[in-house]
Length: 353
Image (cartoon, rainbow, N blue to C red; front, top):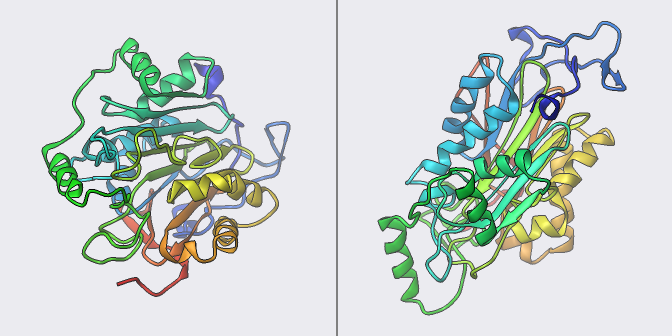
């Protein structure tokens, strides 16, 4: 797989620890032509990993066990997001995720490297780590996306173990929800009436983890994984497994990922949009803000009660994020700090009650 994992060498200048800045640039990278560094460029860079929400802190630390040793960004993001996938206390990602309205826990995930190689699974059941299945799709099939029973069949053929993902806690919550006898997706950031804070995007109702990493050789990669809306209609798929919506990476520019209402992100090809805006010269922060504002302008009334957030990192390691609602935060990890959590700027700064 060396040809699949080869990236533009020499994409960043090495930087000293004193030049790192949270949410800012690591260093200015030399301009490149034809995948080669400009005069004076080197093959070394400052590694960094970022991810959405507070559970991104532990995920980043796992990714750093690879990045800190000079490992590949693709290995780092896969390892990192496996942490929330296995966390039974996380009801919006992986094994602890809440089911759809029919009681099925279905998972979505995607992974992408700097060369445009990508893989994804959607509505897959019985597999604890959909991100790893997504990577197998990327590396061992001619396809990008496998769904439902076909995705499960492929996973089992690849040696993944089938298991019951519906935990007792999730099943209990599902039965409680059934007492309402009506369909209204909740729990994640898709609505604002769940959780003790009642705030969209708050600590009690966030969802997807998206992760972006750059390694010491300047290689970029990204991963995104979720169990989607709680109590969703069976078969519903959000933005997370859709390349260009929930995740997009371009080694010449940077990467972006999203969180929140997947339908709104899909309508705007959100992560692809953020990367293209960075290609045009916008900073990650500016690009994320513009992508959010496009959703708000198109969905003025709906945007007041939903959450969408974008997180981006360019090839120089500069990071930015923006959200519709107050409460979105992202985690940053590099050689200087492994547990940083940064609140994102937002369109609406007043919390819902």
